[in-house]
Amino acid sequence: MGRHRQRIQRPYPTDQTSDHPARFPIPARNLISLGRVGAGVAVVTGASSGIGAATVRRLAAEGFEVVAAARRMDRLQALAAETECTPVPVDVTDQASVDALRELLSSCRVLVNNAGGAFGLAPIAEADDDDWRRMYDVNVLGTMRMTRALLPLLIDSGDGVIVNVTSTAAHAAYEGGGGYNAAKYGERALTEALRLELCGQPVRVIDVAPGMVKTEEFSVVRFDGDQERADAVYAGVPGVLVADDIADCIAWTVTRPAHVNIDLMVVRPRAQAAQHKVHRER
Ligand code: 8X3
Image (cartoon, rainbow, N blue to C red; front, top):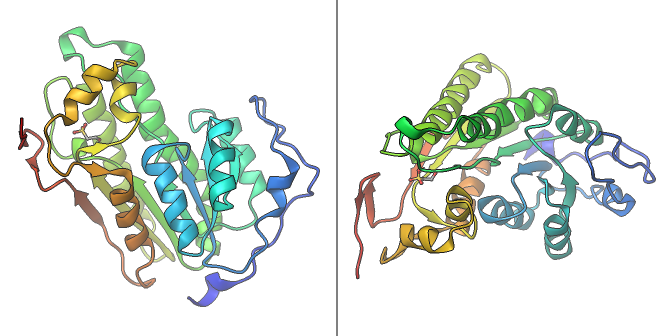
């Protein structure tokens, strides 16, 4: 494991609270938990549920000192009680919030840009500007903000890894997907540009692109709380993927030797041969 097995330093006083304008003081007890020797610090965004939370659990089990970043601190606290991750309130659409997270870290070896999401399934003829803006902001700009902020630490680690959780929606468009497709294609493009820019630096850049994954929130959020419509997405699909399946993939890419870069991993359930080709048993 080489350089990244170094002791992680405590960068900040234990009585410190976040001073970013956002809403969440960071409890002092969270700021002292990163002193163990391990695989290094891994920051996971969108960590409060779904693929993000599963990735926190999995990377913690792999020996990483995981910083779980998301907006909902109550959920992160529960995850911290379970995994000993360090919960930090972060909104990736808010530069001050990202900066505050950066201030808390003295090292970082892994960044999993998982925060993202789809809002709506309207055709372009009826597109909602706000939905499109939010999708671009969280999926593309959020990934950019986090990457820009933590890149110096990732380079300093001597074996940095950035995993961007994109989507199969970055590889094939579908009706009603326009805004989400545009955002995810954008995040994919950002990922490819970043890999080119970092060639020669000790940082791997990995794109994990999930297809149909049944999580508690993805489709519910997309359909603005309509649980019935969300459930219909996965109805009758045998062996639909779950968050742990993607966390398993992320953990595998991250734990390859430092010279092995998994450029792109597309992950679908066996029953989904392509974006439009889904087998359902009724
Ligand atoms: C989720 C996959 O098919 O809903 O990123 O676009 S899909």
